[in-house]
Length: 438
Image (cartoon, rainbow, N blue to C red):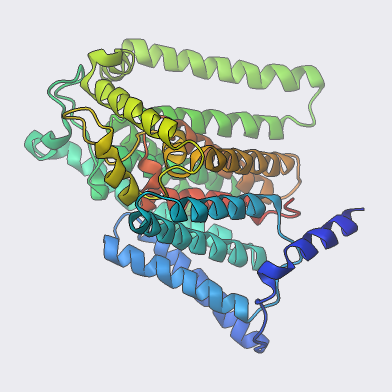
C-alpha cells in the first residue's frame, strides 16, 4: 500500500520534476556540486546578520541558480511530500494573487523575493537529503553568526545611552529603557534572529560530542538568550519563552518515553509548572521585566500598542475589501495600498502580524495553505519524536524554533526579514530532510 501511494504521488508530480536529470554527469561532478552547495549555504548562515542587503540578495540568488544546476544534473526525487505540496499550493496562490493584484508590478517584486527564498529552501532540502552530515555543519555556521552577533550586541550595554536612544520611546510606559540591537540595527529584529537559533544551540549542546563543541554550543546558547533579554523586545521575549517551552516539553516526552505511564504524565507537567512559576516571579519581581510586561498589558495606554492596534484595524479593512486573493505578495505591494486605509499619522511598512499580513497579501486561500503547511510540519516533526536516531533531536529543535517564530509573529512581521525568515526555512528543511517525509 505504501509503495502504491508513493508511486501515485510520484506520478502526480511527474510534470513538475520531469526536467530534472536531463544532464548526466559523472559522480565527481555531483560531489563537487554538493560541496559547493554546502559551502555556499554555510557562508550564507554564518554571515546572515552581517551581509549587506545587496550581498545577501546575491548569495540568495546564487543558491537558487545552484539548485537549478544541481537538479539538471541529478535524477528527480522519488516522491513529493506533503510539506512540499503545501508549499507549491501557496506559491500557486501567490502567483494568482500577483496576477489579480491592483498593483501587479509591485506584487511581482514580492513574488520574486518569495521565489528566491524558496530557492534557498530547495537547495537546503536537496543538500540535507543527500548528505545529512551537512546539518551539523550548517548549525555550526548558524551558531557562529549568532555568537558574534550576541557579543557585539552585549557590548552595547557599555555604550553611551545616546547611541541607543533611537529605540527608546518617550511616550511608552517603558520610556528610558536601553535596548541593544547588535549588527542588525533593530532590537526586535535581533530578538527574532536570536530566538530562532536558540533551540538549535540547545540541541547542539545535547547532540554534539567533545568538550570544545559543547562549550561552543553552550556559550552561544547563554549569550544569545542574554542578548535577547536585553533587546527588551516583548515579542522576542514571548517567542523565546514559547521556543523554550516547546523544546523542554518535547525533550521530556522523548526522554521519558520508556518510563511508566504515570511518571510520563507527571514529570513534564511538573517541570512546566515550575518553569511557569519562575516566569511569574520574574514578571512580578524583576523591575525591567515587570515594566515591559506592564506595557504589554496596557492596551492603547502604551504608544507602541496603540500604533499596532491602529495598523491592525486598517489591515483588517484591507482584508474585508479583498478577502480571496488579497493585494499580492510583498511589502512593496503593501506600501502601495496601505496609505488608502491608514489612519492619520499611523503609516506602517507591514501589518505587524504574520497571519494578518498573509491574509492581506494572499487572502483566505493563502492563509489556509499556510495553516496546512504548519499542520503537516507539526505532524512530520512529532512523528520523529520517538525515533532512536539523532534526527529526532533535529526535528525537536526545528519545531521549537517554529513555535518561537510563530509566537513573535503574532504581533510583529520581523519574520519577513531575511535574517529571520531564512532560519525558518532552515527549520522547515530540517523537517523535510528527516527520513520518510510524508
